[in-house]
Amino acid sequence: MANKYDRTLSDHFDGHGYSDHGTLWNSCWTTAKTPWDRQQPSAALSDLLLNKPELFEFSTDKTTRTALVPGCGRGHDVLSLSAFGYDVYGLDLSARAIQEAKKNEEAWKAGGKLEAKKGLLGNRTWFAGDFFSNEWVERSGVPGGKFDLIFDYTFGCALPWEARPAWAKRIVELLAPEGRLVCLEFPTTKPPSARGPPYNFTPEAYLAHLGHPGEKIYSNDTDATVDGKWAGSPPSKDGLKRLVHIKPERTHPAGMDGDVVEDWVSVWAHNA
Image 1 (cartoon, rainbow, N blue to C red):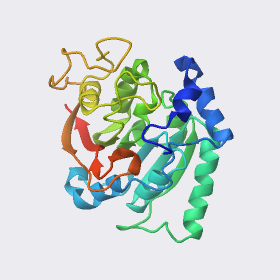
Image 2: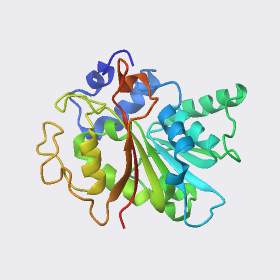
Image 3: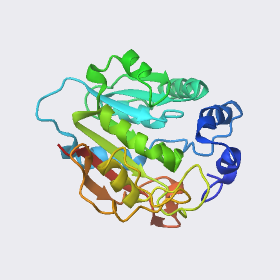
Image 4: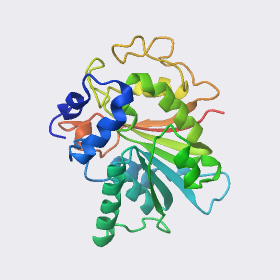
């Protein structure tokens, strides 16, 4: 990013309602204004998979495991997960973003970067589509339309607060019964009243949203302060429980304040 919280996006989206966001995101790609693109995979994710494999074990053996990266952009994390053996589905609202992801995949292949870290290299499938639609899910052919791993980084925070209850509910719907959601939480220290995207997303907000999917967890419509009713409350039966909440040893520069890591990594599972 050009600075701590690049204003390119917030200026671009200023004055527009949520219904305009799809068009605005696509215009970012067509004009090559993508300050959120980290130009590399998330080291925090690969470190987690390498160092804590027990978090991703299943009660029964599975020959293939599926992963979903919503808002995948150029697909850096899709390619990284593929190296861990997952059949990965990269989803983005922008068709132009998916074109860029496919170019990136070819560049990885040409550069010899697409190599399996454990076992076999997983497949990559790309979809231009709406996260909240079932059309791409049906086309994916994934059994039951549910994924063994979902990775969220700069996706949930790209959605305005009004859309986050639906985001949490949709995540729960798409996660397999024994699946794991991994969030690289960002931006956790941005002022709650600051314009976005990206919009403030604190660990407390992740906990409240994912523990109580579909609920409006904020105190008001002007900033992202979690209402006391939801702050720290146990997850509901249909929510997700947080298994791990740690500071990553490595993360993107955008998640750092000097030498201090501001990002968090959280791992989630169904509560019931």
